[in-house]
Length: 84
Image (cartoon, rainbow, N blue to C red; front, side, top):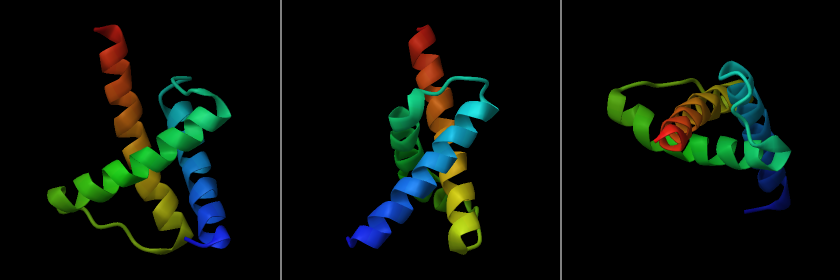
């Protein structure tokens, strides 16, 4: 992984985690936590969405949307675990 792709991954993860925290009304974990949630959410969505037959376009916006969906799913699951 080059430095350029690492920076893009961190940027996409940060944006997706931040948007997911906003969408779920403050369930975020701070800046670094949101980046981690966004990156893990992108991996989760990369595994789950093709199984469901969902295809999202390519490019930067498609990557952010993909990671956002995964981050929302991940934050929702973390919220359920916290309540238990």
